Image (tube, rainbow, N blue to C red; front, side, top):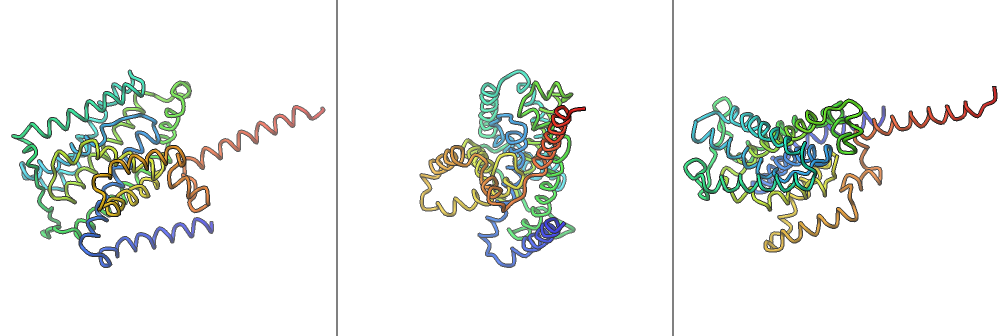
Length: 340
């Protein structure tokens, strides 16, 4: 009870700090904070697919681009409200992500990765060459949305739009992970045959994993377009995918909170490496190798090892089940040895 009380109050204080941050920062720092919120949503989506379901997909940056362009085009070309364009982008990417589960049922991880890479390249090609719609390399702008007649123009108003959206998506992700859906995803990751023998529908669960990942990528893409106000196809190429994988590997696979840590670290890192623009991709690659080899559980695993973070809800449930089964097994063995 004491730990739960402390965590609850810590969450309240942390949320209050987030609400007050725009009053303590300049415009550029506020822009970086907005990007952190965007990448929190995007990394949670990739964590659903790779961290929990164990499915290798390399189309996350492309789905982010589809979400960004869908939002911008609906607002700019069709005059749709941003409040309708953003969920529409999420629904479109969810549909595309669900279709992506079809090859996942027929291919192993290596071939699935190749197919998703091909899909990502196709999306990039379309964004560049379909100039009549996407304007190609000229890019497309997104005007600020309005809220009860008030224009949300500027980094500070955008922050107060992105913050509640990010918090809601984070809480929904934690609920999904702690539910039967989360357990099914982990079961498929560990062993598909055993999962199927336990009554888990592989096709439906994999489709759900791809759909969840795509939905978060699409919403994150719309948030990204709003944050920048102007998008180009080059923003959603291979380097963007490297950033996404770095987010969850450094933050921690199979950890929703790890997505938050990864977004904070990886968004601040380019500012530290501003004088080394040409070496950014190399440094990202080295970081990935170091974390994969020496810290495979990422920053959250390191924090849990020192007792700074509690175990994830799903991990706690699994450990409890293991302890119960071990206890039953030990009591059965004692009963078997006890003479009648």
